[in-house]
Image (cartoon, rainbow over all chains, first blue to last red; front, side):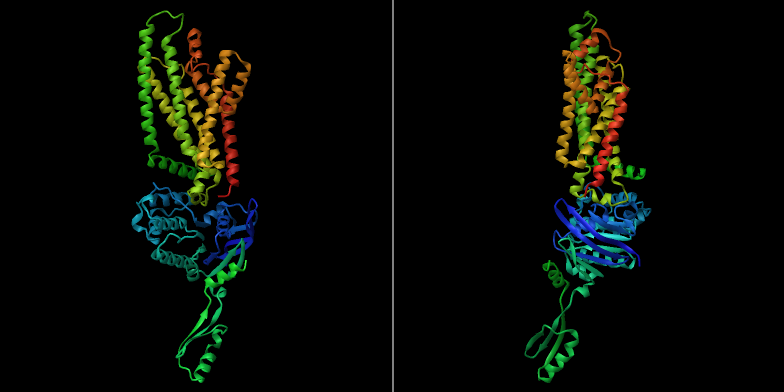
Length: 278
Length: 288
């Protein structure tokens, strides 16, 4: 499988501050990749380096095999910035039309209406950006990022202004993109969201990748919880495989067992563990 | 560099100006300026007629002196309004728009940063050049109607004014790469003011026959060629006027202008290229 994004030994310094210390990262085609980390960890710098908005101090970034920032790389990707603004006077449809021209998309009106439909703004084509809520603007930003059917989508906090329904819509959209083979690098503070949709996750802290893997890999066994007649008992060091033995021992000891639950640490636990260790 | 990208971005900037009613404000101010100018010119020519009539003033033609002075004043007003327009269309084009988050969605498209700058320059320069040309020609027509006087040259001075505001738009656009919007606006108006002072120094130097003042004025004027273009345009108004009439105009506030010759246009092209190269190189290196 070819790589949608390849980051190798990426370093970035701003004056005396080092934002990234040699980051390595690969995103496969059709993969949803989550980027987690505290504020100031270097996540946005990494995303902006992939877009060509920030010039790396060292290392390389390639989008679909082309150097980041090159015309070929920019043709292959879509981007929604964390802090973006569209001109308030502009209507949704004409904003998308401008981006079609700049992206060289020949999708025309049908592409624009399909994208607005996809982000739940089908009725807002003629609405001015200034008359839209922040959440609607963020969804318009997503539609804009999808112009020209990019192979890689870089989303920097794409749901920060969305309500729960809007977040669900974006999750569904991301699932559909995966089915179409579009790779997504999702930079988000919402761990539950990343856990729900991402195939792999990298946790960045102080400019370094401190943990990476699938959400399942990163979360680990957290014990076995048994509900007995005497109350809930937690066997903190036990793994899933030990659950039948624990239940058998409890029953053998004459206790009534009403329920068993294998506990796992959440991605949040793994995140805090990884970040606090730096 | 894609011409379609240049057209798309320049067109978008133009639509922004129209929708945000920049042009409505500019149009209202311009009409007010031209009406005031018309009233002033009509009154001045009346006074000249009543004051001097057919008197022999030793070869001085009062209509010509009044007309050239008044149209020179209109030219200065037009340049000033054109400069305001140029600055407001470009002052935040790079750093300002990047700080507000407007620029990033555009630049992650397959649009080179140099293309973006060229497009913004083309849009602003076209608007400002068209604006000053229309206002200057309108002022000349008003002068003709009010006092039956027409400048010796009209196309050359109009082109000079248009080039001057285009240059100022380029300077403001280049400034937007380095400075935040407010700082850039202030800086460009200070540069504009410096150019005017250089022009005034030249006039004083001419009147006093001071080589030092003339040298300072020459160097400053060439360093800020929009001023040289303005002076050249001003000189074009009375290019064929001679004798005491010319002397009387030269003694006035809009006289003493220097015809810079064809080298000026070469220098303007070179200067514009230099400003564009500096801006493009700096913009290419800037983290957004």
